[in-house]
Amino acid sequence: MQRFTCDCGNVLFFGSSRCLKCNGVVGYDPQSGKMLGIKPGGPMKRCDNGVRHNICNWLLPTSSAAVFCVACSMNRTIPNLGSERNRMLWSRMEMAKRRLIYTLLGLGLNLPTKKTDPQNGLAFDIVSTQSGTPVTTGHLNGVITLNLEEADDTYRQINRQQLGENSRTLLGHFRHESAHYLWQRHLSELAWGDPMRLAFRERFGNEWDDYSAALNAYYSNGAPAGWELNYITAYAASHPWEDWAETWSHYLQIVDGLETCECLGIQVQFIALPLVMLPAESGRLPATLASSPAADGEFLAWLQRWMCLSTVLNEISLSLGEQALYPFVISVRVAQKLRLAHYYAQTWALNGRKTGTA
Picture 1: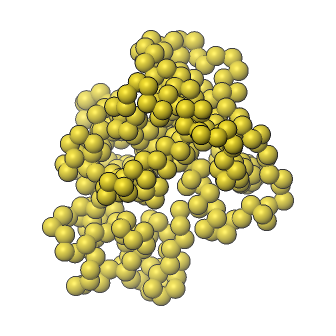
Picture 2: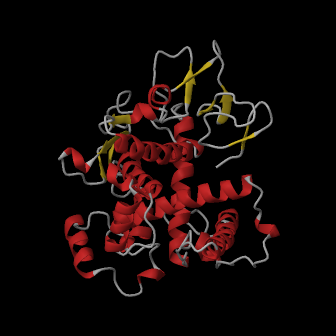
């Protein structure tokens, strides 16, 4: 996350809606990527969810007939706001969702809504189990469904322990499900022999393996012994689609984590730890995509900075009596999968710019 500044010179943060120094109303403009002051008759206005519910701090042009920002306009279903508990949990959900949208837009990815592009658009259903309707977090045809109760820390931690997960966060849910959306949108329609699809299969496996059978086997038997050498999480070992989703989620986590550290002045060159040097093959693309077997040194340097910084963050968290912030090990095989995720992100952004849709 970037470091923002008010017109008065005071520091602002991504969730800021008012400057604590000058008391001015501020909001985030996704078009410019800046925090802006809001004044009567000015060029920008607040999202209606901010005006009515104090939920959102994003902005949109005053000249626009729309009342919702780009993030809130993706909502297809929201919980019953007659409950104070629902409003509190929904606020947490929306903050996590805005962070996801911020990152994807920052990567240059085009994110149409379902209303503007029914085939390729993205929408969110945020549903409470207390509504009487069973809720399964997941993705289907561009619609990401989230269980509102996951915003309850106790509920989420119980699920984390029951599923044996090292970490379980709201933002992690959004990142994971965005991978399924992007897979369906960008990869599922490619020809079986397309280089992009062959690269996926080389890194993650055959996506047409029986999904239901794979998940049933995982939940019955757990991940195979030694899964840490090939997967970022145990769940990633269940099926190639889930391996991709977990890898993409971690890719976004690294993108966000490095940006936040570096924008706040935490630079790896000032840390009293040696860089973890990954072997060259860690940065190589699959043979179907690479015209040369040479490794991507820039990507490797980027990943190695994160491995160093995450170690520091873990030690700080443990020193405060909390769990490690990033309790994961990036093996050579995982690094290669992250390299492919990075390639996909760059390709999708470039294709969007070429077609004028980004």
